[in-house]
Length: 549
Image (tube, rainbow, N blue to C red; front, side):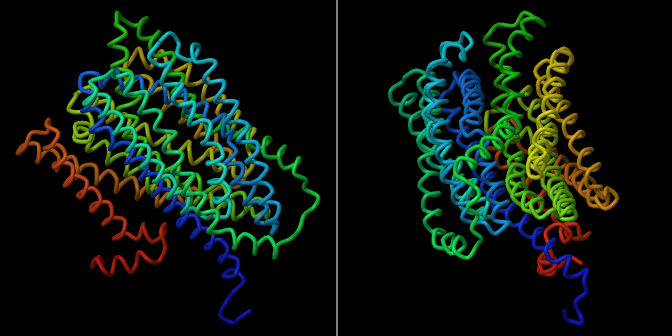
């Protein structure tokens, strides 16, 4: 040991390396997730325009089909990608790279079988799943094709993430959305504008685009796998050989690890399905609403607002994908201190990204909604409220991933069960109070219950240093509030000069609003050294370039 290097310094190196991996991995996964979400939201502008007067009903139909598709996709992938990511990181941490490779092959067999089974079930049970709505039937059938091919694609993503190669996953998400959006817009334009056809056919073709997108992602991931094959072969040759782990035992391990992932990763989808099947009957009980009115209200929170606030939740899901392998690797080494640091890093990064993003979306909600869907007072109100509810939903994504990363699957499943009970308990009272905002409110409250249970569990097991987290958390909240006020003020001033109700004026109003928000929060984060603590010493160079003292 050199005279200038203490034992403490040597112990801190792995922690700094892990933090750097989390920041880099989160950057890639967040970029991929956010970019794909942005593309998935931007297509709405021409899509809604071409559907014209049918757009609200089309949005409701799209949301109903996608909620069912999302649930079956979780079952088809069986949580295997996340389980594979976790287990690959575990065996790689033990230098057993040959086991990781066999794990991938075993997972591929399981995923292909699950994709076939779930696709058949979707086709066979379509009448029951449609719940009496004949328009939903062709949409579900079109999505069954995507369920067939996405599981093996997702397995490959999970395998590469287990090596902390996040770039291929991010790029595949981007290409998947590009393929999907090009097909759905072309099909919608052909059906609605050239053929003057049915809006149901247009929605059906738009949902079939999920299959087209999956093909694009498969091409990217296959290329990435082949590009890394030489490096993986070298690691297998230089690593330890463990003949005791059989292929059959690996398959059982995958299934054992995957079952909790199915339930846990389906958390948000489960809550959306509860809304889908309980919202219409509860609304009929609360007043004399027609099916058209109920679908219109349902579309406001399940599709319109959902498309926009899920963009900022994708920040959280990007971090969640990075947290699982890092925590699993620390758990494999029994590094309790490393686990605590990773949890604290993930929580602070989450606050840093999600709080200003949510408050920023709330500040420009009117302009955002108008650009995407045309101005609607009710829709703007729903989006403003949904922006704040995105924080507990995003927290769930990160916190649940961390619970899985440290192998607390059973406990996490019990917490989710409590959350589902809370969702049902809150649903009617929340809808009695706020009608169309009720489902969002009940989901937010139920997610807060789950998040509290998870954080309490972390604290009891690892003794989180909440005192150390308090300063950056308070800074993030304070800076976000300042940014919110600044953006709101700018939006109000612009509204005095130009109409905030037109699509084009709303778009051009949005640009200075977003710039003011980014500059305000960015300046404060750099000026008071918040960014340095989270993103590393490179922020010092950025501060010098920008002449911020």
